[in-house]
Image (tube, rainbow, N blue to C red; front, side):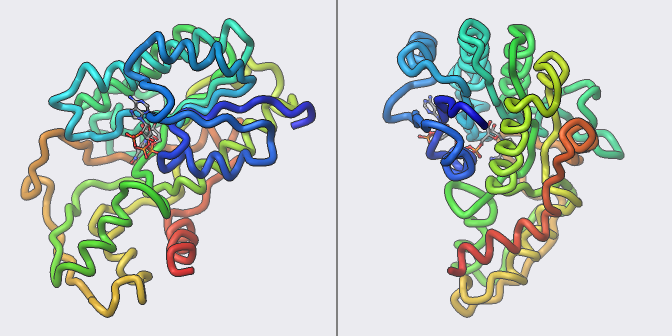
Length: 299
Ligand SMILES: NC(=O)c1ccc[n+]([C@@H]2O[C@H](COP(=O)([O-])OP(=O)(O)OC[C@H]3O[C@@H](n4cnc5c(N)ncnc54)[C@H](OP(=O)(O)O)[C@@H]3O)[C@@H](O)[C@H]2O)c1
C-alpha cells in the first residue's frame, strides 16, 4: 500500500481481529475497537464509531459467534451480525472506504455432497447462520467497495475455539466422544488474516482492476477436509507436551449423540476456486496450518 491508510479493526481482540492487528501492522495507522469501546448491538454507536475514526479501510472481525446461545438471543445476534455490518457498509459507501467482512459456512444446510460454491442457495439451519446471512445481504444491498469472506471452523492460538478446548479436555479426561459425521475445513485465524492482507493490498494497489470487478463474496478456508473427530485426533497427535503426559482416547460419535440447541450442517466444505482464480490466493492445507499453530503454542 503506497499512501498509508487509516485502518479500523472492529472486534480487534477476537480470534481473527488479533491476527489482523498483526498482519496489517505495517499497512497503515491501526485503530482498534472492541466491546470496551463500542456496543455493536446499538446502531448509533456503530455509525458514531465510523464518523469519529474516519477510516479508509474497515476490517470487521466482530460477530456474535456464540452459535448455541444465539438460539435464545436472536435479537442481539441479528443486531451485531446483520444490522451493524449494514451500517458499516453504508458508512463505507458514503466515505469511499473499503469494508472487509467475514461470514460463515453455517449459511448452508450441509445437504450438498460436494463443496459449496458462492452461487449455491443458502439455507441456514440455525439463528447464527440466518443472522450472518442477513449481514451478507445487508452489505451486498448497499454495495460499494466491499469484500465478504465466508470461512469455516475458525481457530488459532487465542480465544474460544475447538483446538484450545480439546487441549484442555485432553488434559482433564482419559476419553472424549467427538462428532464424526460433520465435515469441514478447520481454518486458522492466522491464514485468514494473512490472505486478507494480501488481497486488500493487491486490491488497493489496483492489481485486480476496478472495485466493481472484485467487490464480491468469496469463500476462504484452509485446504482439505476432515471431521471434528479427525481434527481432534490430529490435534492430539501433534500436542506433545501440551497434554502434560495425558493421551486421551477419542471415540467417534454421530451428531445424533451430541444434541445442541443449534443444528449444524453435515457438509461445511466451501470451494475456494473463486478466491484462487480472482486473487491468486490459496490458504495452506488444514494440516499445515495446524502444524503452525501447534508450534506457536509449544513455544
Ligand atoms: N469462530 C468460527 O468458527 C467461525 C466460523 C466461520 C466464520 N466465522 C466468522 O469469522 C469472523 C471472526 O470470528 P472469530 O472467531 O474471530 O470471533 P470471536 O473470536 O468470537 O470474536 C468476535 C469479536 O466480536 C466482539 N463482539 C461481539 N459482540 C459485540 C458487541 N455487541 N459489541 C462489541 N463487540 C462485540 C467480541 O467481543 P467479546 O469477546 O467481548 O464478545 C469478539 O471480540 C466472524 O465474522 C465470524 O462470524 C467464525
